[in-house]
Amino acid sequence: MIQVFRGIKSLFTAQQPLKTPRQDENVPKSYHVFTREFDVTVHAYELDSILGRLPANQKTDHAQAWDEFSSALQHWRTKAHIASLEASSEIRATLKSEELHGVVVTILIDQSGSMRGQKMLMAAAACDIAQDFLTQLGIRTEVLGFTSVGWKGGQSRQLWERRGEPKAPGRLADTLHIIYKSAQNHRAGTMGDLLKPMLRPDLPKENIDGEAIEWAVSRQMEITAQRRILIVLSDGVPADDSTLLANDKGFLVRHLKEVIARIERERIVELIGIGIGFDTSAFYKNFAAISDPNDLGSVLIETIEHAIRK
Image (tube, rainbow, N blue to C red; front, side, top):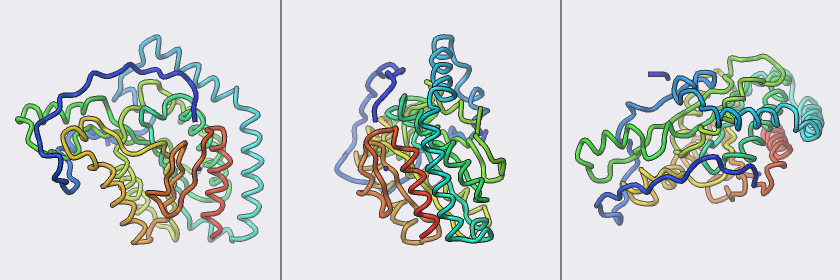
């Protein structure tokens, strides 16, 4: 198996409601996963092998989004680049090169359906500026994304149904974790085509945030570093209809809070949540929030600078 907004018109069609299983929703269960058999971790350039090639109409939408990313954001990019240069000067005045080389920063992006359009476009552009800014400083950087392979629980739900729909099955979706840039990629400059798959109109679906954060942390722990910083960009709470209909309604949110609390308690990774039209203060001790996606670039740079210098 392959391992702190508003915008462009939604490109996905409404899904039919899922069948609601019989169960006692008043009895919360500890977090568990029905099956990991259909979970996928993949490099961005391999997404065609998971999602298939885009049909003609979606190819047009994808090309338009990529054209806007590549050429229509020049004024925005110039402003963000100036902010990154100023932040870089402040950081270099505070920390020595060897200290910077001991830092690894991961940017983890919620790629749920609600992020589609302008939010995703600006998230991609902000990550592009941020990773170049960090790489120029000699800081190892990862850019990761998370969503689900399909709607309605995918193959995990189908397997659950074939097994008689046991009560409280746990997470009931096929997770999709995407590597856009790994810490081993030290090349400075823009990420270029590595970010193009992030704008696929068929990519955003469901979001299992707790497990995605655990995955990003596990990748950081494989890297020898003195400091590990994880920044999560999200526009809402975890949501997966299949999982929430088959378990109690607080199942995913409760797990996210448990994961964040554990990481903050252990202090091995410095965790920061940036909310896009979403108040992350209920989840993260270190947080920022924005209401306009156009502000994401400057807020992300400012957040990174503050985290590195503290």
